[in-house]
Image (tube, rainbow, N blue to C red; front, side, top):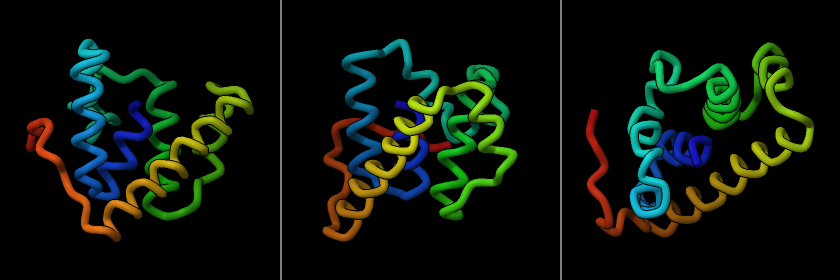
Length: 117
């Protein structure tokens, strides 16, 4: 959830941001504080090193389409090869959704109010 939310936020896909917030608020409301803090994950005490490693990986891949070897090394310490493949799939599939929605002009459905920081 956090990786997808970070990628959607970076890509400014408001339909995905809105949909993810709706899902979390209805299915896993205890995770709303994490979702609300995902933009500031590096400084937030809500995130542990494992989550930060995945979010750094997602951020670098989304912003620069490559990952620093040190970032990948940190990710590899916290996740198995299979888990890294799953994270990479989450990132790439979120990009696909984001790009399709942006290309077609699909924005928020207004399901949720997204907090403005």
